[in-house]
Length: 287
Ligand SMILES: [Ca+2]
Ligand SMILES: [Ca+2]
Ligand SMILES: [Ca+2]
Image (cartoon, rainbow, N blue to C red; front, side):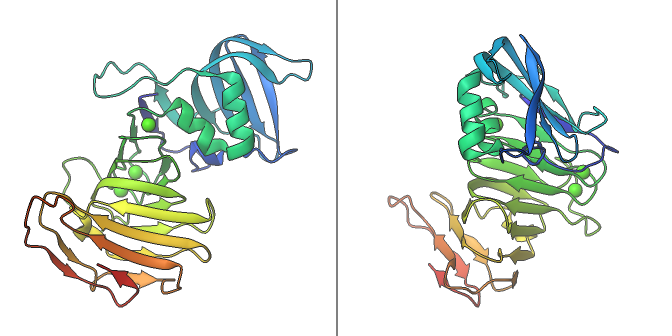
């Protein structure tokens, strides 16, 4: 997909993987052709628009042959939730991965919408918000998310690795007037957080949620919120640079169960001796 730009003014504010779930009886396949089909949420009419090549369908109208080349998302009126540019012509971004439609549909059915989207958008993508408050997601490794103006929520879950997230524009100074949140729904790794105020372990999503964070630029984060159930792990790790991390000034809420842990692993490059400074939290830290 390479470049996804969420639109202002489109209702609902949801991510691509929240458009439809694989629960039997909750969706139908429609608009079938050799170059695409839609997966429609029967409750509200929202749909994933699947683009492909040489697609064929079985007697029940289920995709049985061909490849998926891109996935878009629309509301019930057919308005795109985001614009998807699959050929932005930028060498730093990947085009979508072509995947067999049978693989795509089986991943959707067995592991869910996020897993199916991760197949297609595994490579490097840039996901940009609008000037309003956005709810936006990304899939796969090495992606960049840019929220721009508004109180934005960045939803990251299983399959997201090495993501860089900007709550505002790339070159904006942090502003107290925006509250930008990273919402974690699975096991993820974060390369860099910039102008992010809050990390929230979601109540939904995978049972085990773990965030590995490079602590650079973590100073903007004021608040960390645990999920109501399940394993929450916060892991700070650095290899070659001295760590400066003070967790005592972060506001933790819904935190303190035995299955909620904070780990700090500094100086993993054992050929270096670094001057690491770490102040723990009031909770279950392991340094
Ligand atoms: Ca925004
Ligand atoms: Ca990606
Ligand atoms: Ca923002």
